Image (cartoon, rainbow, N blue to C red; front, side, top):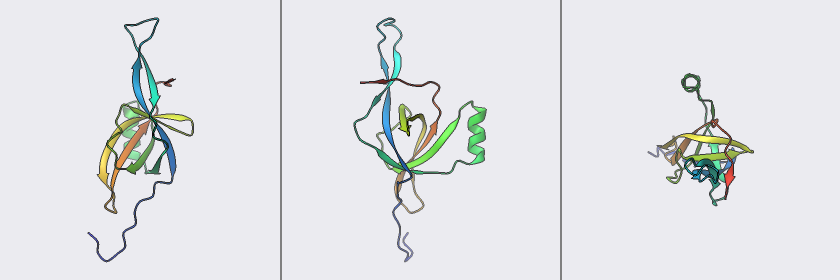
Length: 125
C-alpha cells in the first residue's frame, strides 16, 4: 500500500498507564462471597495514543448508564481484555472494549475503550 510516500509509524506518547487484572480474593469474614480486587501486572508503563470519542459513541454509552472516560490505542497486544483495569494519573479506568485493528498507516494496534468503573477497586498483592 506504499504509494511512493514514506509511512510514519504511530507514536504512543500521549500518556502511559499501568495495567491491573481483576481478581476475586476470598473474604475471611464471608468465604462464600469473594471480594473483587485488582492485581498489578509487573510489565511497567504502557504508552498510548489518545483517540477521539465521537458524540454518537458517548450518547450510546450514556444510554447504557456507562461513562466513557477515554479511548486509546496501544501497539497490538493480545494480553489485555475486559477483565483489566488501567490506572492513568491515579484514576482507575475499566477496559470496556478491546479491539484489534490496523491503523491508517498500516500498523497493527489494539484500541481500548475505557469507562468509569462501577466501584473503586482495592489493590491486592
